[in-house]
Image 1 (cartoon, rainbow, N blue to C red):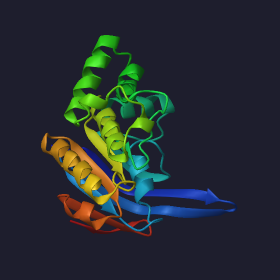
Image 2: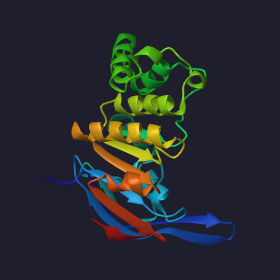
Image 3: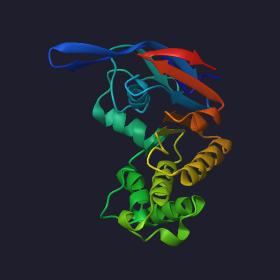
Image 4: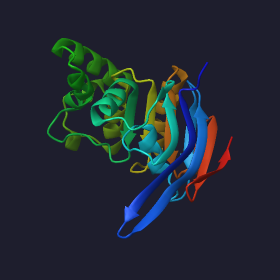
Length: 225
């Protein structure tokens, strides 16, 4: 079976003033369906840039990236949005919840963009919030929730589209150690159900529970096991 993600010789640069800075320097990797993988590295190593390319939030200069056997290259924003909305769920350090919408409405949003019916949106969102242990908080606004509860809402939102891939960028970075452990256990449970989970983290406790750890330094993979 083809891997879910295949990357060959990926190069990405940014322009800073008059200088071009190469952030990714020929990265190659494969991630299989059902993998639980951490990407670790110091700040500025290129790990978040790699995650943004995998999540089709950013493009790349050269090399190739296949997702689900489809070459993702020079695609327009409409195509990119289609891939993200159908196949990829995102979990961010800062949650990215809409403050004027309840937990339930935040989780419904990806289904709204898909054009699902109101009843289908409501049912799926309620199921996901129950799954992450927030059945009793679904009508609360984000400012009425703790950090851990906000991250659970974000995870429910990532799961509601039945995405193939969950991308988590420093998902425990804004949380205390006890809450971090709960969020990691939730991501582990999601992986056990067959989802591919990719976690960018600088926390070794988080990285070490993953089946694979990819370490990046200065835009290159220095270990992958």
